[in-house]
Image (tube, rainbow, N blue to C red; front, side, top):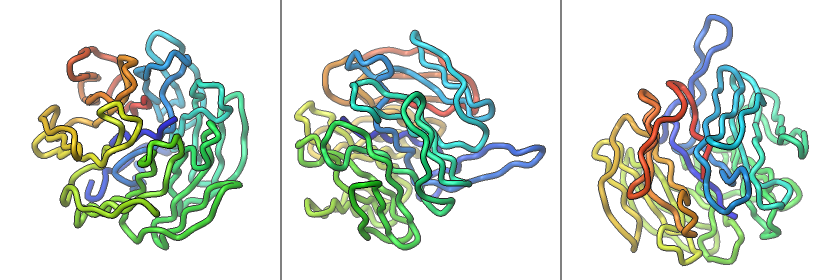
Length: 278
C-alpha cells in the first residue's frame, strides 16, 4: 500500500483554488496532494480518475462516477478498510471532517492541518493522519503523535524501507533536504521542485524524487533522470500498467490531457479537475 502525491499548484507547492458563492478562495497546501491509493476496482493497477471540486463529482475512467463531497473538500482516497480497493474520501478542512465513502465518517484535525493519509502501522489499512506545518506536528489517529519537520516543510510519508509500512518524512523545498524519520537524511532537488517520491524501479522501496516544472525534469534518486511535461502540468506518478512500479505521468488540466510515459496518451476530465489516481 502506498501514498500518492499529485501536484496542485506555487512556491513550496501550488494553490488549491475554488469558489464559494461569488468569491474565490485559495488554500495553500504542500507541493503534493496525498492519496493512499488510486486503485478503485482492486485489480492492482492505478485508475485514471478526477475529482471535480466545484460539484463534488468523482469520475473514474471505465469504472464509475459518483457524487461525494462539495466545494472546498480535499480528496483523500485510499484503502481504509483493507480490502485492496480504494474508496473515494474527503477531508473538510473547515471542520476536520473525514468522510470515506461506504466506510466511515469522523472528525480529526482542523483548518490548520494538511491531510496525510497513509498506512503508518503496516496493517494494510489507510490511517487517518494530519500534518500541522506551523509546529511540525504529525497526528495519526490511534497510531502516533510526534513532532517532525518545520514550517514550510512538505510532508512526504512513504515506504522508504520496503516493509509495507509508511514512514513519516518531509521535503524542505528551499534547500532540497529530505528527512525520513529514523531512516535517512539527504539532499536532493532545489527550490521550486515538487516532491514525487515512489517506487520507480519495482524493488518495493521508495526513492526520493522531484519534478521540476520549469524544465519538465523528473529526477528519481539512484534510478533515472528524464524530461516529461512542463510548467502547465501536474505530475501524477502511479502504477498504470500493473508492473508493480511507479510510472511517470502528467495531467494537463487546461486540455484534460493525461500523458503516461511509454504507456498512453488520452483525454479525461476538464479544466479545474483534480487528478485522484495512484
